[in-house]
Image (cartoon, rainbow, N blue to C red; front, side, top):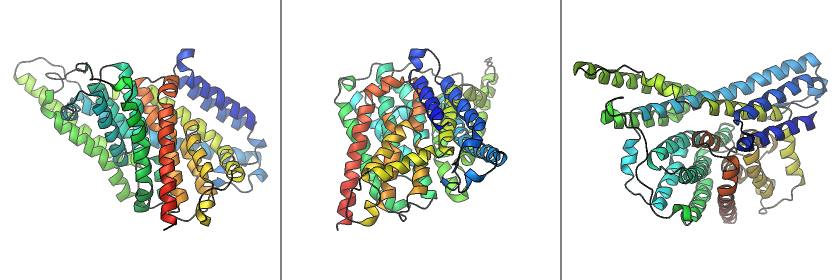
Length: 469
């Protein structure tokens, strides 16, 4: 049965990769794969002997002795658990995307666009990748990618060039999220599980993450596609005289950006999931949006202008990419199905058992092969990095702030850039810019791999230098 489940996952994955060749939207194979995997698990639940306890990040003891009814009950609880965790991400994403659309409704991104004076493609590339790296550490790589691609659409008109920018933004955002405890979901997992603390994480992972995004950006900036200047202005629709003009543009931009930055602060103070803070931020931004929009509507009535009132919140919600949300639901729940049977956990364990021990003479740093962790990073491009890191947390017994955990944070956080569907940032970029899987594989994947390997080498050199002093 496990073989059939893996084959279904592979076929679904191919369906997503061949989206343009098959002429079907990627959400269709993602949703079908998710439903079929869980249906097969339900039909064969009595024959499974292992089950992964996601709450404890370990294989459940005595699962093979459970009755069929007990196993079915456990499957239902696990399904509900994963649906809840996935819903947290989707609701967070909906809130972030709505705030971004509200800012765009008031032409708020013209504020940051005004700061970008250059038309040089090379300079723009460095500006966007730096912003992606810096913002992702503060507002997480997913939200940073949404914000920057929205701005990119206002600055760059040429579709092919914009795809290149988007690909490099994904690399930079994932690199920026790896060194911050709130920048990437896997790093947050390690932080919450008390495997890393803030300052040692930054000390060990910041420089490798900089190298990870800077090397691909440097190589790409020398390529033909980034020579010369961008052509003209983008065809973004001005809202002057319709949505309220530029009067509230700057206010809504800073309010929206501040509301997003508030989310990790809210999480730190309340210890509630990030989506709760995002909903509060959305409520605040939406309140001001309605107020500003009604003021404009009232002024237009005073001056005798006939304008129908349109709620900025309703308008923004109507522009949300729901196909991307459903695709995200399908792919995350499909990976959760493989995780629940312990397949990912056993895969990581077999890697650890069969790979040679590398590294320094220190027992903690040689407990896990560097190659195993590198394979973990490469694997996170194919399979979601969340269950892989979850398996690592349950499998490895290194103490808090051991270099092993820092290397896992780096590898899992940046390795997903090698495929467009290997990270949340990539999935969002794929939806927003309609990036083809094979286009990304051909044009961007090798750059991401070079950056990933360069950062890993720097990490190992720094680690060995520190341990030898």
